[in-house]
Image (cartoon, rainbow, N blue to C red; front, side):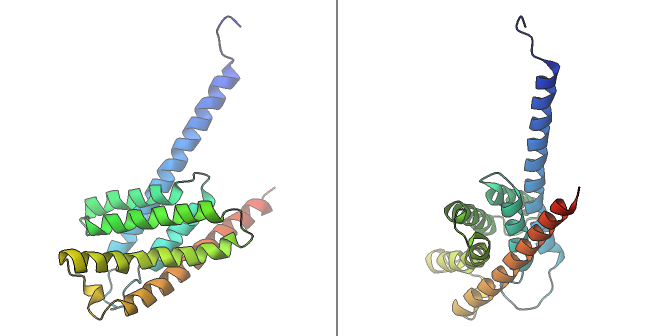
Length: 187
């Protein structure tokens, strides 16, 4: 052997490294996609939290399909980067997005051995999306940074954010299950 590595070992390591790098790029890009959806789907529906449908679906799908323990947080960091690029409430919005990613990853780590993990993760995405009006309320109360979504108080946005986050989590779960089914059906 005289200090030389076998070619199989070298190519195996580089393939694994490329594969891991590719996964990380896809996860990061998922967050960029979520913010792009937020920008592209700016319809004046006057329903606070409606973007939780796509955001929580993407974060749930990423969290369930990626082996990294920090997948939702990495996707959120991709979203923060895109927010800076699109200038979409880069300050408070970025903090909220990171908090949501961290919350989902932390809850998944706590719940991953529970028999109802997948269904509990839907509730987790709903609660993660509820962080948005709570953090905005804190900024509005403490620093006077006004949010239009809180113009009718905190209860209505909490209910709508929970609802949209729950539906988004269900969509992400169903997309992940569909991917799992397709993988198992392939020879």
